[in-house]
Length: 153
Image (cartoon, rainbow, N blue to C red):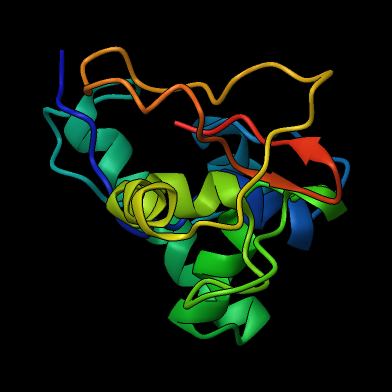
């Protein structure tokens, strides 16, 4: 199993859905419907990792040419849509979705729980979900916004 990889990423499938709604979004379907110019070495074929890299690279180039989006805008557009009360209302990630922060900087959420004293858990809600390989949070701490507990990590 690969280790969890934190950081920002671009999802060509998410971007393709935004640019070309209503078509099929598998690599090969996009290759054919968008008539992508892909010329991998002759011994490679579809559904092999390196071949799929060629198709994905051609797709990313087409997305950039068609959309005019910057890399940072493509990163934002690749993230899952956040619900209104899943947005962090303060701090260096103010205005960003908790799920996005959990992926790119889980240490910040730990720091927040250890250092921000004004976090309260609604009595009728559950507990903060956490990756099992990390030490447990203190039982008295949780993250919530607008009186709704947020499940992260």
